[in-house]
Length: 212
Image (cartoon, rainbow, N blue to C red; front, side, top):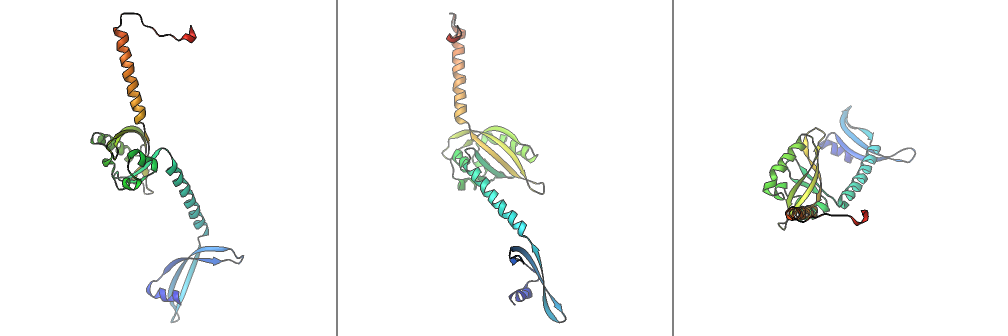
């Protein structure tokens, strides 16, 4: 009676239910119910479609998604996703730690808010590669919430929807600030000793005692 009553205001009605088969196994079904007139009497025609496998696949996908989510959240490498307008839509904890913001703060921001002005031309150039379906590796600078600048290495991959339209970018981010500082210090040291060697009139040589 309830179904018939509902069909008087909405016809047809599609809903999901569970049926018990002859072997007592349960089947998840999608039911499409139609109300029509049969000899002057309101009659309901229902068609049930077995969606058990589909539901099992959805459940498996949810489990898989959860596993991948846990994997991404526990990676030490920063993972971030931006949409086609460079709005941040997802970050993992490592990405948030690099930027000095909380995950909640970041998903309300645009990349322009964490990239200094002198780096935005590079970001725009890289984004254009993504629109053209290209992945790339590059280095850039971000400004943390405390104003400190960090050098990061980025591997960016485009994201396209089923309709083929560009939807955004998936990026892995690594903070290489310490490495860059060490590299600069080593370069300064090399330059210092090169100048010393070139100016000194005495013979200077380096030897390995293990090879003499």
